[in-house]
Image 1 (tube, rainbow, N blue to C red):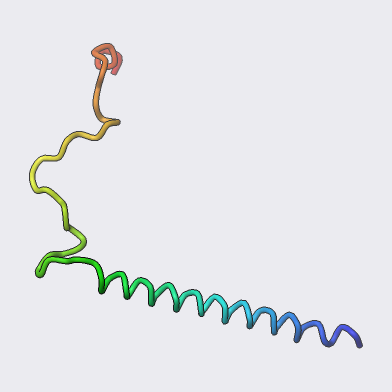
Image 2 (cartoon, rainbow, N blue to C red):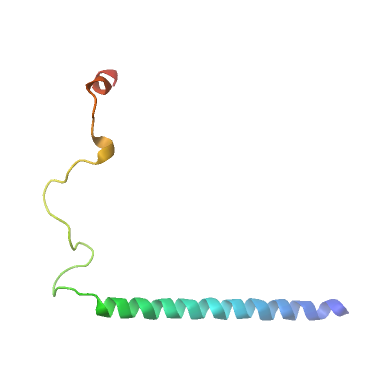
Length: 74
């Protein structure tokens, strides 16, 4: 009969962990909200594409061929 109290203790611990996780999530959301409000943004500027330069892009480093011998092997 001593085992009957154990599930309620586990349940209480699980509920506390859930509440703590929910609290952390709420705080993280509030912090993100404040950061978004304080971030400088130009009117009409899309934050997803801010800073992207149109036109041809430089080649990726892994696509550069440094040695002519590599071309012959391929």
